[in-house]
Length: 227
Image 1 (cartoon, rainbow, N blue to C red):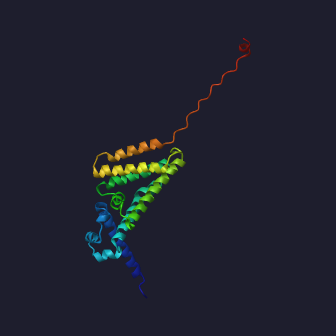
Image 2 (cartoon, helix red, strand yellow):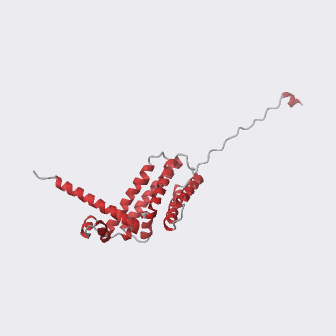
Image 3 (spheres, rainbow, N blue to C red):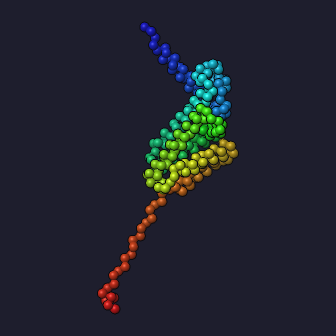
């Protein structure tokens, strides 16, 4: 009887090898940027031959795109999906921001591929830039939906522009990354949290003003009317 398990074992081993290469590539890209990735550098780090690495990633572009997608998957696992367990509205929006801040804080000594990739590929059209834009836009769309839900739940003002609020919140993360990673300013994480609370205060739904009962004037008595 033919051994039909051999192809399955080979496929599984190939997937494991690819995952190992991808993990090493993600670490390299976090420290050196996507442009620092090459088949040769990855072969040296993993102890594999260039041809062995090339067999799993046919080109440098394919390797870089795979790293972008892997980074996005990890980002979703650490930030997006845990936040979805929170109730719709402000609880979920706060969780999204807090988990995002925690991830940026961890990346201070490595780097955010979304941010570094935007610097590297902002003016370089091609498949790698397209993959970066797609992943970042996917995340921004999710955050904008969360803001919209907070409006629907009545937690934020009805006239809130989700796109504008998203712009302001995203700006806080960019400032945090710049001050914490580049300038090494202590307290940058706390400043980002304070700034986020101020943004929430700005857009918070105002409670309806209390209506005071109008004092009714008493009708004049018959005696008063005659006098």
